[in-house]
Image (tube, rainbow, N blue to C red; front, side, top):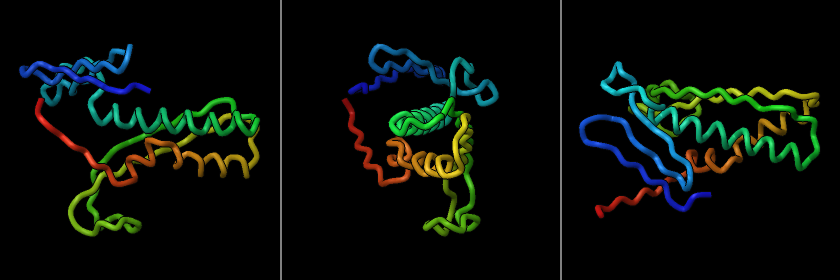
Length: 141
């Protein structure tokens, strides 16, 4: 796990260079909103974090249990919805973020194993971070 992620971008556009340890990524906005579309937008990167963590966590659990899981596919979508349209949400006014996550498990798994792996998906560290209280502290350097 990287200790620090560094993001650098010029003030004239949206493109960002991301460094995470030895890895290099690019983030940008689509051309339709003024970006160069040279990389995924920030929300796509957020969904990729959740999806990859979900898949890794499910795979790790299945390996430990020696279950016949062959592959995991996670499809995610982000949207903004009216809080009043969310029956299970504590927030009742304004807008809130919704992430829809669909998990496909391949392998000769029993119904009980599939159900357990679905439960394990919500235990991935990124899911817990997003679902919990987040304290972001920002300062100028």
